[in-house]
Amino acid sequence: MTDSTSSEKFKKRIVSLDQFRGYTVAGMFLVNYMGFFVACPVVLKHHNTYCSYADTIMPHFLFAVGFAYRLTFGRRVQTDGAVSAYLRVVRRLLGLVLVSLIIYRVSPVAKTWEELQSLGIWGAIADPLKRNWFQTLMHIAVTSLWITPVIRSRASVRIGFMVLSAVAHVILSYYFYFTWVNSPPNGIDGGPLGFLTWTIPAIIGTLACDWVVEAEGLPRVKPILFWSFALMLLGWAISCGTRLYNVPVAAQSTPANQRQKLASHPIIPDEAQLKAKQGEPLSEYLAEPPFVKPPEQDQRQWNYWMMSQRAGTLS
Image (cartoon, rainbow, N blue to C red; front, side, top):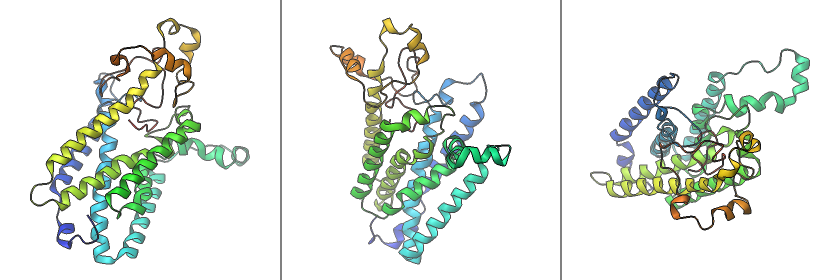
């Protein structure tokens, strides 16, 4: 969808997008309702160590957001002009941030003014910022704001922006973020830097929008299906890095291993871990497929390459 795209294409209603949104909302109701029951299929619960069905709902939301954002912003630019369109969307997204802060309210962090002063600014907002505020609506707002500078750009620019966002998340996770978001109180849906990886489904949604809107007749089903499977395979391939964190059988029952949930080097394995995998067959490097539970933490320590919605990991 370029600036030269005809206004007729912008005005088309995408019925499949409405259907996809309906499916996503239905899935959200299912996992949010069933997930609270003890007798519930494990695939409908969040586990933070592998991809369950529940973990597919949030990416679906961001995909739909990216698709609709690209579509509606193009319409707005054509009717109101670029400046007016940007001002309007930023105002609306900042409004959504405010709504999120109101909906995801937090309990008082201090009982007295003196206690609040002793906490300081960071002490007062650290826990709400990490766990309470950054839930679905906030992630939608912040991710949309983040991709706004490239929402009208050509596909190569958007893809480059997506890759740079993913790399930034890996780097920040290496220095502090993965350990921080997985320490009490644990983060939710990627925490305050989750927008860097939620950018991936959002940008992919904008690319899907281009294909659907610019296609003559039926959407370009073949490339959409091809890239859908290719991206799923890529995500699974990235998750294969988690196999480098398998704990040797002899060390699994040691007290130190029983106490340690997170790997000491969760982003880049140390030399000992790499040597331990040398000579093993290919099957020992392949991660479990989605919806299949991995070994417990005493057999595989938590790391960045496992499928974790809590940490907002790439896979």
